[in-house]
Image (cartoon, rainbow, N blue to C red):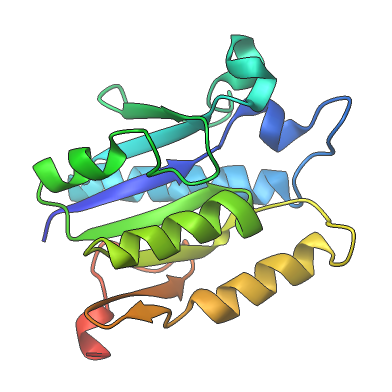
Length: 185
């Protein structure tokens, strides 16, 4: 099965915060899990794709780049986006289709925005998704803590489906590149 590891908005300034936004919750744990899953992807021959948000650090400089603690494989593909949805206006879906990808493993930031929209968009576009439950993060909202947002999304996105394709939530320590979707079909 052709697969891709899709890491969304794992950018320096978004993860660490800036003068206007706080750092994401459990950032060290997030960074460690991203590196763990990247290593698993490399061992499994699974390509890595990063999506970067052009709003972060105004789309330039160190703050815009993938976080310095993430070990980025040399052959990594990048897509830059101007919208919340990683698939909108980026060429990401065309790239995945050209590679005959059927399964994406998703990680990154922020849970209730870019992660949620990517999981849902992927399933309606013919992809099975594994969301890494301990591989995405966010900040508090006005009504919910970051912990509540993450827990809620892990619950609602596990089993989210669009008839033929759906998402499951698994943790970084699991064998993510051996998808379990067929056991639910």
